[in-house]
Image (cartoon, rainbow over all chains, first blue to last red; front, top):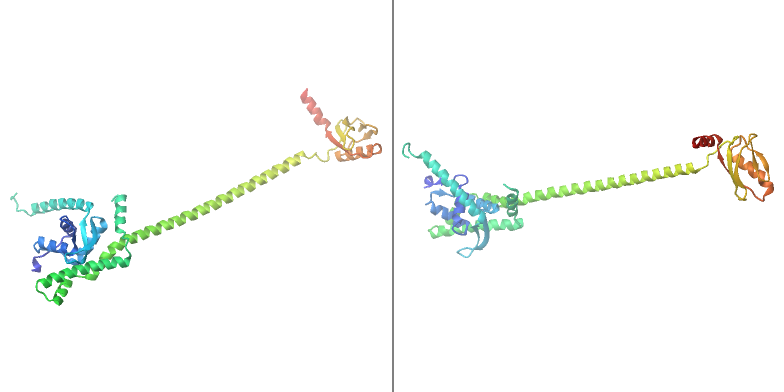
Length: 113
Length: 220
């Protein structure tokens, strides 16, 4: 059902990646799968764009990365939220909440509030 | 962004790994992703060939993703290389400026030393010239002659040129000196004394009458 899927808004991929990693370290494939399953398949993360985002966040210092062994004992790159990444996540979550509240307010039926 | 945050970001962005190692890491990471996707699709019942094709399709442009990842890591390195180049250039300019400044200050010091030497030499010459007896002083009536015989030191004294233009000499008597130059007077006096001594060479200092009188006038 590709029609039901939503393209990610610009900048929201960073927020989703930071949020997924707030629960613990993960490699790229796990991050993509968690976003897909937690959004119940609605959010379409183009896998090809996930990796440049991960590397960009790593270069900014919001993520830390190290090579380790995956579940099937293969060499995999694991990402972890850094302290500045955690601060960034909190700020972005707050911004997102106020934005979605504002949008909901605009979209609410007139006189309903 | 503060300077510190910018530096921290640059420091993180600069990957110490060699480009080949970076490229191998990115390739391994993306291949790991495709392998995971294939395994999941095979577990869901797809054939390995179909699973591989589906995984690639779902991933999108693999080459573009690889290039983007590498670009992010190389970006910091390029910035650092530019900074390195700029700092090297600045250092080179600073060295050249310092060398030029040192050279010009040394040249200026040399020039100043030469000028000082020239001035000193000039002053020396002037002082030497000042010490020289005034040439061609003409002896006149009333002038005082301070004289001494170099070979006969007991022949010495100060005599005044008399109204008849003569000065008295021991042994030789009166000798005419009026209108003669100092050198001529020395010659005349030496010759006048010659008959009385084995050798004679008279030196004379002329004290002009007018200057002498003027001095006396001032003194009184």
